[in-house]
Amino acid sequence: MKIAKFDTTHIRNDAHFWFMTEFRDIVLAHTAATLKITPQFTGFTALYNREDEALKKISASAFTPKIHEADAARDETLTGMMEVCKGMCKHSTPVTRDAARPGGLPRLQTQRVETHQRRD
Image (cartoon, rainbow, N blue to C red; front, side, top):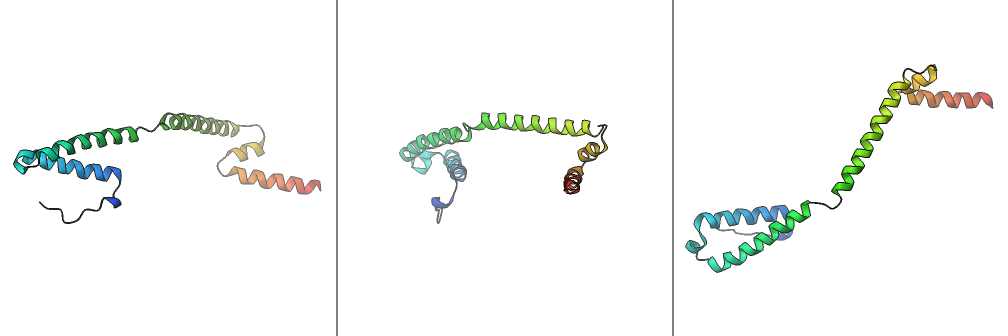
């Protein structure tokens, strides 16, 4: 096999590592000694392992725990709001019940505007 052209400036880290993994697997299948590249492959293997370790560090973001905390807070807030709306559907005031139903908020805003206009 011969690679005619390979431009590394247009590939991402994971694509580069995938290409290097494919190359390593081919060399391991045919052995570096048979291909007469043992010294070069030894250096390649060291660099390959460093790249693998670096990519593993990159994939574990320092922001992941904060993102999970923010997601949990958002989920709790949304769930709480949904429960409040569900409870407000059983409110004693008809305007409040209407506002709590899906699509009810625009009607509530309209009623407030009409009430405000009547006071003027």
